Length: 323
Image (cartoon, rainbow, N blue to C red; front, side, top):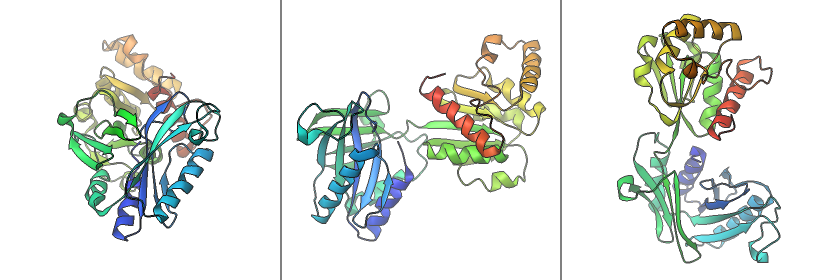
């Protein structure tokens, strides 16, 4: 989970010379509330950012971290958290959701400032690995560390462990259309760790100009949008242009792409009409059946914000293979 607020807080703490710590879930099992990759930052003044799972467990670890900051600790601390009544008492988190997680409390020093500055930048295509171990926090070229998936944890023990996270393993959401729903959806998806890219063919759109949440915004012809959208398991796209003609033009380019999710904002009648047009052009029905339209989960949404919530919920469901 890449949360810029975590890196911003830690960098500001270094700038202000306030002791701070990074907490990272380096491993998790079963129904643990904190998943591998979850992060949280805390400084000696009590400022917090991010989460390692919430609840009583997080509260207790925050208090433990404050104690360590007051004591000016200078080495990482690895804690095993069991969310049940088994195991040693010192490892029990006080929660009963089952599962377990291993959390590292990492002291922050001036030497890490450049790392936090780097982590605040868009990382969509940067082949870099974040590494944490007993010896330090660093950034390493991905080519030097090959592992599958986004996270890797090796030899989890009090005296020997190493956590690595592929920073280029980022989800990308392409939003085609820069209107009110696009703005609301960008705001939500940016907080969900998506790299958001918005396209529109209109040179002056206030909602696009006011969109401070998308990492990229492009004014292009919709006839060319397909060449700007990458394929892959971490690629998502939602079509919400200002006209059914533009929706048709865009969907025709995207329907055969290998995307994790493809949605189109349309009524049932509009969606059916566009589908029929594409069927007449030879587009396979099996490809069209994978398009989510009307887009979003059925929550009777009306406002742009409500529609954005329904779309984001559908995307999250698709991400976790619940659709």
